Image (cartoon, rainbow, N blue to C red; front, side, top):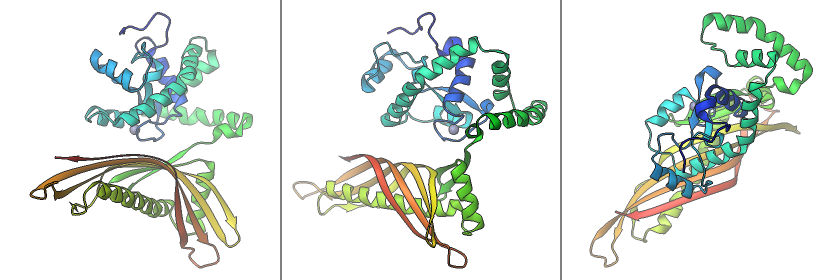
Length: 337
Ligand SMILES: [Zn+2]
């Protein structure tokens, strides 16, 4: 295991700024942690497996995640885009769970070739490419730079729209919190932004309210399933505390909408990452004392939400919110303490 990258390889130490630009493009300007679109200047390069890891911990990580023996923390396959806020939170936090690491590493691996291509391309870029890269990575918090950007960028956007209309589409982020504490990231592309206008102007609902109601239902359904699974792991006389949410993150997007007779139907799609905890007391196997059980469970799933509005009624309240879980990964542990 070597801590220095071989000559000629693309890596963090020697290609830092170029890698940042390439990662910004490949990750679509979104932070891997909060999934928000950010200005270039508000993003940083994140080492998924931290740069300061000890040799022993690195060997363990390589084994646990099935990484190649010559895995290097500075190679693009260990790099992702993160925003400054999330990076600060990350440095104060315990290690994320093994699964999120694995997913991030998988995504970085998927992007690796393109990142390397973009880094190499920057070295031979022509004048237009260089100027546009400078514009895309400019510090827009600086008043004079921002004024210049606002003055000249629209002409670039117009040319771009004439060349390829799809390329001027953008994602708008609507973040909100569920139950006053859990973050939800709602991202809207052209379809989502159209639905937002229809839902607000014609149906008189806000997307945030509709999504909140659907997601609250969804989470409570998952919670019921986890509670049932916890209870199954204890004995019949166990007395359980209510199941609490320890961590919850939701990401949602609108994928489709359409009119079906008198009804408007909107399809949402998203991912839910949630951790639950609970505890119980139950008799020991001799029945002469109590033992304490600690339960921990996590569910990582993809889901679909469908919302309908009856367009023939006055203020068009939304009718049915139904959901299906399309893909799910669960992990449950109950231990005696
Ligand atoms: Zn972030």
